Image (tube, rainbow, N blue to C red; front, side):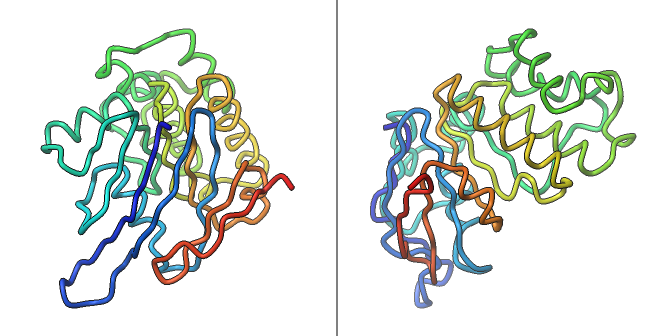
Length: 223
């Protein structure tokens, strides 16, 4: 298993209601899982915990064989740099770098920069003619595509995506989702994606629904 979440609990107020309560699931290489639920159900919190961006109250998270809940800040940063790809609604592009350099940034930090793979990603999501441009010259949708390509460029073991197509038109959103699915199949990356789109969720292998911080149901999206 490349991702194992066991009896995860998250409280921001020690005396308050848990944001997440006893959440458990596993993902193997190449698995794709849609994370669904109403606003406030704990979806983004779960992604932040798996990414090591927030600390758990109790429970365990194991990523690619490493139990991350006890790691130092430096250890968590290393996991995010080399093992976990992050696609959030904030693009977090580096303004002083070109599109090409933004795409390659994390892969270079991880020592995994593959120019041919980066070029393939850029072409797959329609950025091949913007490689020398800077983020401020791009539309919001284009910037989101750069952020997605950057996350995929490192060939992460686990790709965490929080509404990655929310700023894209339908045609581009479908192309970006297909790229993520193809990348998961080609590289063995496990894809965990928060989405409000039933149509996109249906293209994932499995669906997990959170309701009031708890896992409500697991369903097989393909049958």
